[in-house]
Amino acid sequence: MSSKRLQTCGFKRMPAKEDKLKSLRNLDQKRDVLFHLHFGSILECIQQTISREQKRAKALHSCVYSVLENLAPREEESAKILFPFKTEDYLEILLPTIRRLAFKCPFGEVRELMQDYLKRHEKCDPAWGEASSFVPSSLLVPLSPNDEMVRQMFEDIFASRGRLSHIDQVLGWHPLYLEAFTMSTEFLMREEGALSVPTRNYLAILASSLHNCQYLVSLQESEFIFNRGEHSWLEGLDKAPRKIQRILKLGKLLAHRPWKLTPEDIAEQMEGSNGWTVAELVQIIAILATFFSLTGLVHGMGLLPEMDMENPSRSTFISKEYKLDDQTRETVQKNRENLLKLLDKKENRTQEVEKKQTAQKASSVVDICCLTNLTDTASKYPEYTGKDVERYVDFNIKTEKLHRRQDFDWRSHGYGLMSRYYQGFAPMLNGEFDLIYNLTYQRLRSAGNVDTGPFRRAVWYYVHRLYGIENDDYDYASINKYLNKQVKKFIKKCACYPQDITRSDYEVFGYDFTDDEKCHVTLLVFEARRQASIVFGLKALGKYLSSTR
Image (cartoon, rainbow, N blue to C red; front, side, top):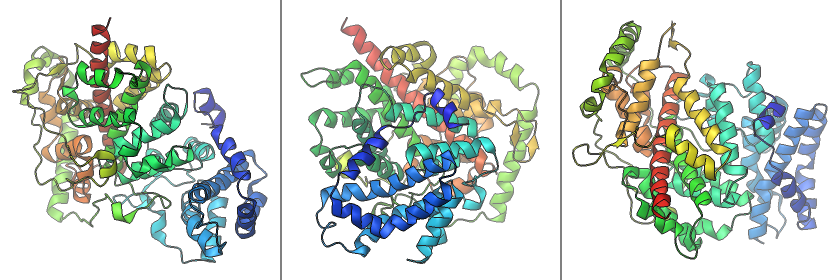
């Protein structure tokens, strides 16, 4: 996929980068002299190596931008870095970015030059190249893959953002989805919309902090600073405007008990002299739902913070070494073989059609898999989440009213409401939902020509059932049929308690799926939860709007 194709689809290069570089040129002249003195040789080498091709020139631009971006905000905030001018001061600031470029840039020439520079200043640590605490780098898609489509996407993403994230690298297993995800996320967080870009970043920080996701919090804090957000807001939510502080209550409901969201909760956000507009609130719901759910992918795949985002004191990754014993390995292998037999039965579809009439009654038979001994109960970001820690509480089918998909669903109701107030994003999001719901490679491990549809649907509707959504057209007995207890545990943690996922959860899993197949499952969970959150948010908003007419 070329840059031109990405731009045609709405994935545009961010003009703010040129503005950023222009403003950086006007900073203290001594800083510029010092920068070129110590790092000009590196950039000159890069320029000589890659200026022959336009795409390589983009890489140069991104490298310069990445280094300057890391340097400038700190200088604007602290005179201590400017005086005295010591080489080691700047090395300490810039080395994390240089390390990232040395190990995570999709352009091989840049990686080699940066690694060569590092060798002259410090001992290189192979661990710097690790993207996941669960999946060895050797099993991930290479930064310069043979697949032309994936290689071009990696290069285009880096050229546009100055970064190829660990999320991007993991999604390289599923290039069609990576393309859709990249375009929708770019639109949501950087393109047109009622909210300013720094406000979007800050909302993403709040959403990610509710699930103790260091990776996303650090990434969005960096984006917030780059986009000229008010630095004091990062000291805590109490430093942000009252209007933004009010979002936390909405966010906690949407994150942990979205079925309890009411029109009154929406009214609190919209009414008064400083209330949000409808267009703003629609985008807020979309951002919160996206980043709540994205923490499931990050924690579910054990993604590690990139080298210029690490904060060991706030590490949220539970990645103790875990090895499957022979008995467990044999069990998960047999589980997969049994699943293949179930999926191979030709009468599956016939049985599902026959049971549609009784599906409504069958939802109560789903074993939702109660989880105990959850360990990560304290917030690592109290400055954003507050002292009162809230967590997901199981939807009680006996006391809570089920949300019937036929009464308000994404396609028939949510899509139209979002399109009305956030034009452009709804079709992208809808395409993403459809893509992951239908995406199949017709295989499980080495077995080919496998119809994985019943399994994928079971994952999707199990997540919806966890959040109190019922589809009258689905046979809920299929969930217990295709999902064993261990895989339900993993799915539920991804959807509801992502910060509690451990290495053993990933390794045991329930079936001996490959890493890319496990990633496929986490993507289904991510999108199913995102859709559920958006449906509840838009449903409450729609009721509020109807009551005010």
